[in-house]
Image 1 (tube, rainbow, N blue to C red):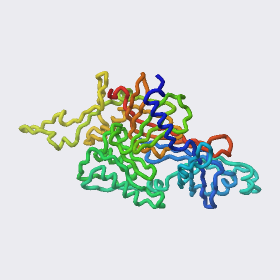
Image 2 (cartoon, rainbow, N blue to C red):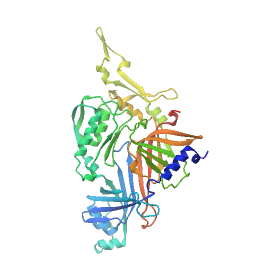
Image 3 (cartoon, rainbow, N blue to C red):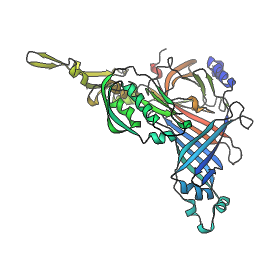
Image 4 (tube, rainbow, N blue to C red):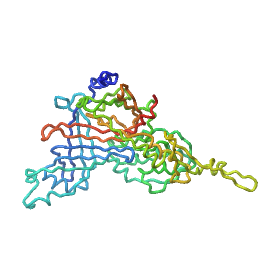
Length: 452
């Protein structure tokens, strides 16, 4: 049966007909130097990498065309104190600024040149060439790495101390809030708050010790590994769009209770290859069309066979909670009472690979379970054409709908990463139109484990 004649096809057309968003955008940039502002001739690429599993903030690159003279006499001499302002606006299909939303806004970043070449030194007859002459002779393609002003300061801050009578989640929230308040930037760039998933374990601990000199961006991970753990499905913390997001990395089972939800409708590759409208927002639900197909990477079985689908460790807390029985003049210890053993899921072969933890003695069950959580699913990625990246949040609970064997099926997932590409459309410097596409990365439940 043709997918477009199924209820899934009806939903695809409902998204297309909603006509939300704009197919193209316009992007411009200005480089701020100590010798004055340098407007770029054209932005070629503006890309953002978001890895929610291993990083804590965006990796942003900008590739632009700059006149050679201004590059040599203004930009390069200011290379240690550059800033870049990027502005953008949506464009309607017929060209011109869209009336639905006239501004995407302006953002100002710290900027670092990714190439240290000096055009002035490389030019022939250096003493005969001034800025204007070089501008008339040549142009330069320049690549910058951009940094959020708030994160630039945050990345240099450290913490440490003994924190008494507190829960681990409260301490993480308090540290991030305290350090955010100390960031000295303009109001438009100040961090606004924290969006944190409450952990199941809210036990109050007598004390939590963080060594002095621990970088603040390492503190949540240190607490998770060494101070009792926060979630049993991994820990991620990420700064995006002026908010901190703290959540369990691999937990894809909370779609119904999530405050924001993502619905992905997968259609076969080349079925509808060039849709202008690919998403729709209804309340807290963002529905998008995956036009390039889903690409799945399943190494879960190999990972379980090599590194284990279970863990064993001596539970330190049980040494002090009746772990030793005194009978007569003897102290008796039971392996069953002292050890903590569990598996993440049973292998269908019946052979479970339970390995000894690297921390042979531990009371941190949350962290030990987190080490297994990444093996309980598959990695899925897809292309989202003409996207709006601001709609996707770290750890967003997701449902993927797809058509297989004559049936509409679904898969639970969670967002673990995103790569956004704003690319210049055309080969000249005239059109000024940019396509904005994204690759979204998900951690999803194995299809074999889905309830029918």
